[in-house]
Length: 160
Image (tube, rainbow, N blue to C red; front, top):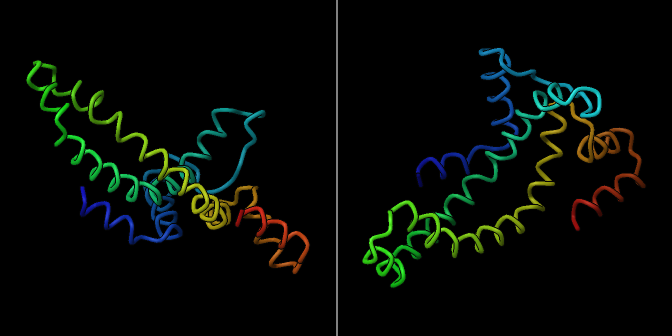
């Protein structure tokens, strides 16, 4: 687990996006490479177009969350109440999910909240690669056209 998390942590978002496009759109032909269909027009097509960008952003955040969860679970499994649950004869899956994961979920929520800003910043690259409308594409367009008012507004929104 730790090796795969470390490997994914070192892969930049744009590279994982390009690799996912190559794998799922070019080689396997399962998903469209770029484009956008509004949810109100065709919900199924919208989901097909959103799988690769969501997977790209999820792969960027997954290693940090996995490492924190792993260390939290190791600490939780060494607590006295886990030994008591084992002595009571509870199933290992119940001990793991109810008694160990529940206290660890507080840390996960905190880490996820901290990562929201980085996630929004990563959408700039993902929206540009997958040709999606959004804040990131607006930012790139404002840079190309040198529209300073929009640029300041988007940077203020993303940085906050």
